[in-house]
Amino acid sequence: MGSKTIPLELDALIGFNGQVPFGLKLHPDMKHLIYPLGSFIVLKRIEDGKLEFLDGHSNNVSCISVSKSGSYIASGQVNFMGFQAPVIIWNYAERTIHVELRIHNTKVESVAFSPSEKYLVTLGGKDDCRIFVWNVETKQLICRNKASAQGHCLMVEYSKTDDTMFASGGSLTLRVWEFVNERILPTECWTNMLKRYVSCIEISDDNRYMYCATSSGDIMTIDVKGKVLSICAPGKAKFNHGINVLKLLESGDLLVGSGSGILALCSKTNFKPVREVQLENAVTSIAFSEGEEQFYVGTEEAQLYRLRFKDFAAELISTGHRSSVKDVALPHATSKLFATCSGEEVRVWMVGKPKEKLRITVPNVSCNAIDFMHDDCSIISAWSDGNIRRFGMKGQLMVVINNAHRQGVTAIAATKDGKRIISGGGEGKMHVWELLPHAYKILRIMVGHRKPVSCLKMKSDDKECVTVSSDGFCIIWDLVDFHPRQKIKTDTLFRTVCYHPDGYQIVTCGTDGKVIYWDVLGGTNIREREDTETGVYNSIHITKDGNHFVTGGEDKRMKVWDYMQGKITHISIPAGANITCTRICTLNRILVSASEDGGIWLWKFPHLASSS
Image 1 (cartoon, rainbow, N blue to C red):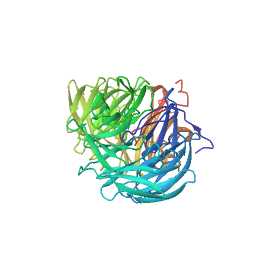
Image 2 (cartoon, rainbow, N blue to C red; image 1 turned 90 degrees about the horizontal axis):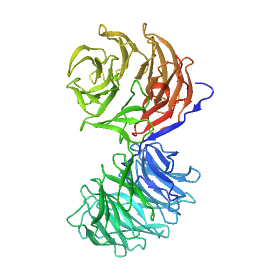
Image 3 (cartoon, rainbow, N blue to C red; image 1 turned 90 degrees about the vertical axis):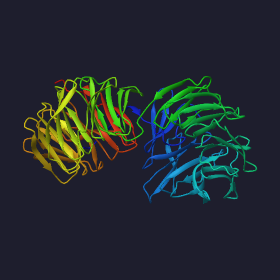
Image 4 (cartoon, helix red, strand yellow; image 1 turned 30 degrees about the vertical axis):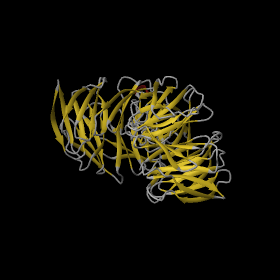
């Protein structure tokens, strides 16, 4: 695809996997935040937001640990059933892989460094149920044991001062482990018949007590020497939706993050809150360092907060999607905004800002596609419940087209005059809607696809549109006489399509890694280019001058193509997951790519726009 391609320059990244327990870390150098996004570990410099990435995992990162000095980072991942899930130990200073440890099956649940950084403990998931101890320096396995006699072990926590002791906990299991003579020996903790799901463990510096957060919303204090329950508190005033994360301070007080979004500073005597703040979603991570005036909190819904210790004043510093981004839409007259949809949300973002400008939520349904109306004053959206919803730029619901498609609305676009909406459905039909003041009516139902319409693009004169479907066909539709004008089939499953701005050609991409140019009038193959590295393309978008287009797919890279030469000119670093959508903002200033891990990547567009 050309002798040389140039790397794309990353402008910004929006995203954080808040569903990884304790996934947000503050590096001991106090200069970097560390957190997972898809298969990546992101290193974000606090001072200026500069990003670096640790790329080595093949699937989503499931756990992270940072060694006491910060010299090493350990991370585990999930994998498909029956496949090994590796643990990677990273050399932080060099940003390189120190060693990759392949022994766990399907998922790595938790990892923890010993205080001297000589050892690493790793815990496998439900399909593995084993604990391993590794020598970090020699990269060798030392010993192993079954994680629990009953229940499911979820996490391991090393002593802060003793290499010979660590603890494990989970559902109906709580153990203290002794590491001697290259063997690990567990002792069950006696909890006085209390049955608890242990979600987090903190061990005091003197190794006398172990504080165990539970999904019941209380904290068990375990006497480490006797391995017995000392106290369980608070009694009646438990934390709603359980405690997800716990941090022990030098003072003996505890920082507590709950499933209801409460972040509290609890007294060491009775665990009752001394100070608390209500955050928007469940707290899953707390990152802090003793003596610092501020600390950081991550939530289940991909939010990052910065808080002050003295008064718990909370500043929301970034937000993101928690699941795959289905679509990205661009306004027609500005490069300052773009919109995304994921799950039950539609969000509008300002370019250069890490927080959304607007969030629209429709509970219990999923948004499949979005588009800006041509005046940029409203957004139309396609939903899994079969409805089309139009929202104003303040989030107000303007129009609902109920039961637009029987099997959900899967694709949507609007005409330039703002008078019509074209929609595709899960049953494969195309509907043309006329928008009236405060009402709507259906103009025509067009039949051509037999399976869900996956992509819909309008021709610039509004007289045609083109669709692709999971039935394998690409159809060009006449929107004047309302019938299929061309039906294209080839040896691929089309995933995406776009018009060249002159309207005489379309470009398709699919599962065979080929980019194919087609003549609109005859439906004939004009040219095809194959990129064997991509494999499957999921998205394509072209500049307004038609000189360049961008693609994204399952090799996780965004690629910029020269349209006339059919060659790749620039290529991005891989994202943390498959790319689902690519867009070129108006005026060709910014490229946007979105991925299955909820990440939104903004790249600087490398070519100048045509003066024409």
